[in-house]
Image 1 (cartoon, rainbow, N blue to C red):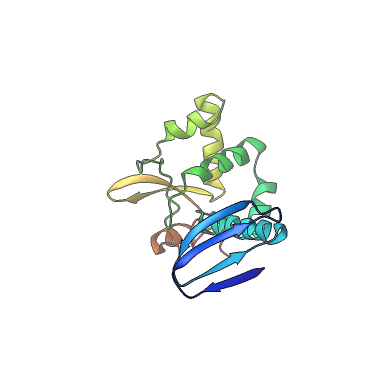
Image 2 (image 1 turned 30 degrees about the vertical axis):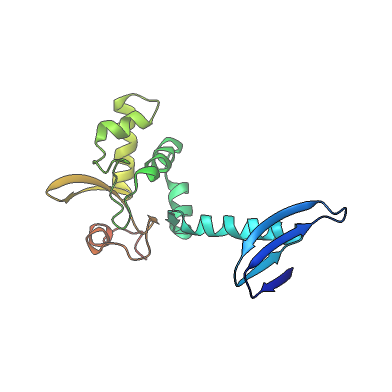
Length: 170
């Protein structure tokens, strides 16, 4: 990496070895950084890293996730995975991208199964303490267990209270 310090107004012109003008800029008290190919690639990767860091994330609690995966039927596990896209930040409440609540019929539509079969998978998740209904803003919502998965580092206390009596809370 090469840095050129320019301390006065002027025009910066970069020439190729053949004498062709590669770039021209008006400058005023600036530092110009010239990167080689490896440094440019590294800079691109760091920018991608920052982009990933700023993305919304879902944290999985590995020990509980492993046990859950081994204790659920494949279809109930598939339903759990499909529900992750509805997790609300900080509460683990299931909401649509527009912020409206997820109804049981919305959950049924996620699976390529009958309502009766999907209701069976929902009940499997409920019985295992993975999925629960609770009141929020005077309405009943579905919630996923924050001891298995969470979408924030400081989970809402009401959500923790809802699942604190499950065996996932170790």
